[in-house]
Image 1 (cartoon, rainbow, N blue to C red):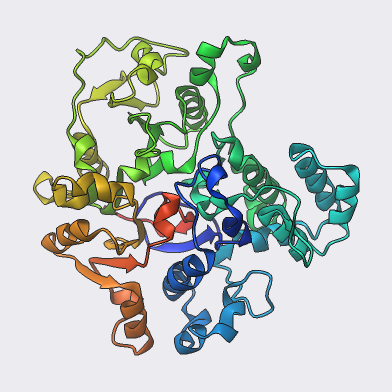
Image 2: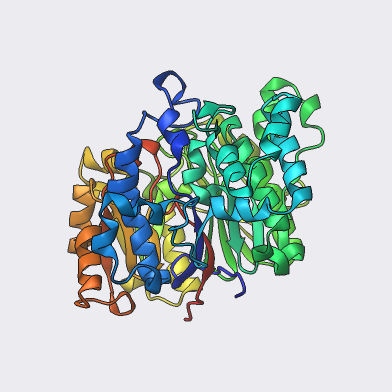
Length: 488
């Protein structure tokens, strides 16, 4: 099965996830923010009462034979092996793919195992004797140690955990039939990015795409730059800032996690390879409450978007600067100052070739309207915006913080969100959507009252008391590898 993603809303057929592992249960309050968490979480609740519903939903839509007829059994303690990648009872789907399993399969190759263990031990400053201890493990146990950091029956901590691996999207993004390897901004994510790099270049799942893998090089002069210039010239880019909204149109966010420099490199590569014809850069405020563009907006249908109203129609207080060529005629001079005002929002669009000059788009709603109409064939009258918190103060900001705008489309019009965002639920109902809790929907699937194939215009609610503490929603927790094409 080939890998290809050319939209945010085509029927999802294959993706990579990572279930919460034991490393999440070892995050301590004094280190939570260093590891990019807002708070410590209760691991068992996050797994059993929240994330498990996500897994069951994904299986029902992508690989139903793995879960159909088993829901009652899976609610029991003795069935926990179904959800654990290193268990013999694990569901092991070719469509809902567990990161840990991919890593374990990669580690079956002895040469790769030696190289990867040496690389990780170097990053984590481990002893040579630790390398030898790790190389004696089976591939599945070694994969668990490299992810969770815990070793042996006593759960000795060899490495710090990588709790953000839960958010697989940030590591890689399919752009049509190419795979972009991202470069996380924070040191806490270095190990997981390296693990994914080894998987992509060595696992059979990606064997047919070796020539279609995109890596962004680091700025070769970065280490020579003065400190006050480094933030603009690092190569950091995360998947939450990349959206393929149509086969020829890519959105890239400039945020606290993705730099202008990285965006410029990606534009050059994608245009040179003729992978897309149009790229829009969206500079969002450099603040933790925004983080990525997928925390500000995601797509629900061709003509429907959910977004944070505070940023939707905001215009710059400064006058628009004249757009001039900058570095190979790609980026306007004004973009070099994008980070100087953390509250500023700016949108600039580029077309492949020099016949169309870059242009500024006044606000986010105008951009999304253009995507729906110009790229996806909708009429202006049909385009709708659903706002976080139903655009009511103070619920818009509160619910955006808990990922009301961060939704994963299982297919056009059927999206997964969190159950704590009550006002956003109201907004979906007002827009004509059914709103249903994951547990209730699964029961109806199990009893054949409903079928995933016939479900339309539905917001599915995941339990989210613990998941939302990690500041990521269903969109973040997915790395789509294959979606069906959507046609105009």
